[in-house]
Image 1: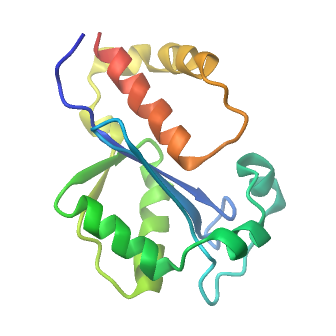
Image 2 (image 1 turned 90 degrees about the horizontal axis):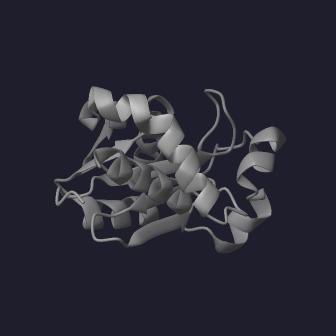
Length: 163
């Protein structure tokens, strides 16, 4: 088993799949085996809602309005927990813009960086990635598509591909 430190993995669920979508949930798998998860109340002007995206993440807009936190509160929590750190995403091309949108709505600068997971994967890990991720998913009772669980699955797959 590798003693290399686990990467911090971030995953973002959104209201849809296109350019008018916005973040609705942030999940992070930390390097100490804990998780962070927050639902986000849609900010003013965040109106797009794609029912096909809802069928994937299974988070209804009324759930966000009842249990979500304002964008500023989520952005402050992320900055407090991750200032100066690098978080990795397997969907950087969409997760980074959604995080930028979150911080813009919050009126704050992001005090951590987000990088593509591929930046820390070796060629050997990339070759083994899909088969190993399928094994991890088979072991998990994944009844809900949630950001923190998705982040953990990515982190666990990363760890297993090191072996």
